[in-house]
Image (cartoon, rainbow, N blue to C red; front, top):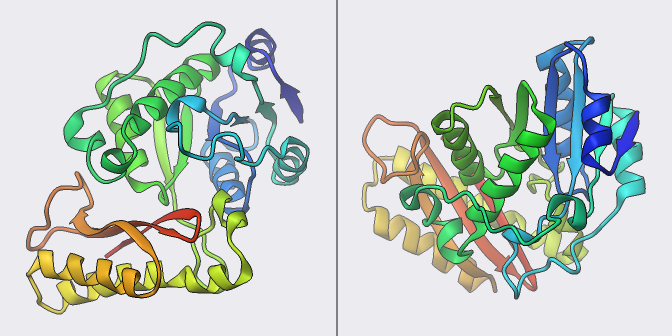
Length: 277
């Protein structure tokens, strides 16, 4: 496995006709990331090349968020990626990715990017869309794999590829969970053992929302309000608990596949999760 920190070296390593699959990450990897690498290998076969990037992108963090304390674990991440057959790691520093202030930015449509996560984290999807577009230009992959845990992000990036006519196939990786059902996240390391048990309430509440809709209840405001209150009563600080259509995150309609999405802070750690149903 090769590790490259600069763009010319990476591009030289990727010359040739073999298909390239790309897994962008911010590092501090877990089994969910490794599953995306395995999925990428399946997509391009044994002769393809798998590139994983490790870059903590300042553009998607608000000033009060955890950019400075976000774990940087390149040595451990490299060992994990090598163990699942990653061929190339691209691990640039900020000077490589942003040699000058990034004045050109990608602004996704407000109806998709300014709701839910975008409402509570203004500018987040601009930062994500900008860095992913830049990484796509650097790596020039045939396939890119993103996890469903970041459901809205996946939708934003799929639309980006479609509208910009990028020759990249986007694949979605299923959310990986611990044995207890907690969605794997790089931020789970912030949780105490007690908080990891309490964190299960988030996915349980999401499933409860879906169960009420599937059971015939149609008062969406009440379903969402009750889910928010359940978390507050347990000491959480919820941002949103909602039911949306899977294909566009619009309001639920009869007969259309739904997804329950939620974001809430437990202690000092903000968690997100979603359940399709």
